[in-house]
Length: 423
Image 1 (cartoon, rainbow, N blue to C red):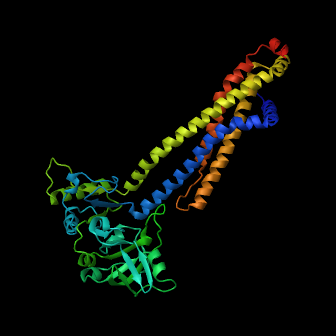
Image 2: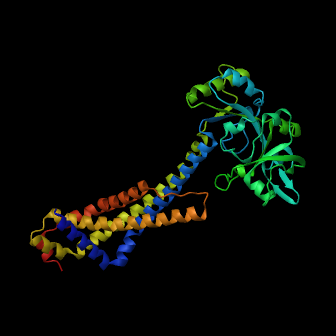
Image 3: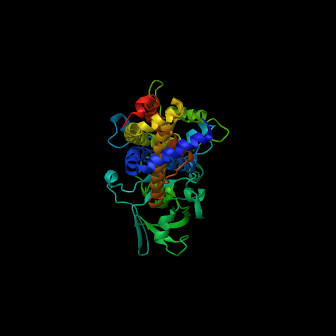
């Protein structure tokens, strides 16, 4: 078919849509809903996937952690065999440092949660300076190497914990940006003495701004003490974790296996028994996120499929009505030389134009929703990508082609004599 014929058929299709505006709008509504749901949810998930990837990179793309518990497994009471596991000790890092030469840095760390009252009977962590007070902060304790293992703990002002602080159990603290802003508005916090859970601590540094994920706590809400200072003030602490890094020129699986074997020997785990500890790779956050979004993707797919099916049936129905209304026109076109292929293409183009209009509106509305989410909730960085725009167009055109083929074929197969006698 020549370009002129295609252009003419498109103009005829546009005239038909303009002649039945309300009917056409109702027809494409299902396609609009389906494409909008796909584009909006895909934009949100795409943006969050990039955000999670950056977060993993910021945490340390080659940083692993060893814990007694699987803290990514969910909530609820843990099985008895897991709760009875031996505690990890800070001295375990010294043994692994020798037994696993492929790793770069290994360091113990621990902490006190925001609301430890449920487990320890203690009050929530509170930090004060003069009349200013910040409650429910996260308290962490570590060694100087922790900053090398966890890239997200970058100091913007002052310094991190030193070996001298650790060896002398000095009462010093590095605080998050939000804590510093609340306690010291317009004042340099370095060198100031604060009360942390009732104990005097000197502020030696402030971390770079890090608000956390999805409104949750980040480095902004964290205060870090030397590990020895923390143990001195909180001797009841028994839960420790280990963080280690793998050099860029070393296979992470080989280094991880060395650590696992060292931990099994250290904890005297029988050869046939499972590990009585957990090792977390840098992508555990991504894996957890993929599990969480899996159900959302399935739900969105179901909703969009229903919308597209309804839209497709609407397109087929409106095209069948159009064929009936334009029977005489089809007869005239065939009488003056139009072939079956020409009639079929004409109605297919009309169906595809109808569904393309719905797809374009769906992409527009999906983009507006993504922009609104990104603007109103900055922690959810929805991103409209070219891939999903292309997919939205392809889906809408595919619906028009699939559901418009039967009416187009029916129109192409009509007998011209019968068509001319149709009233």
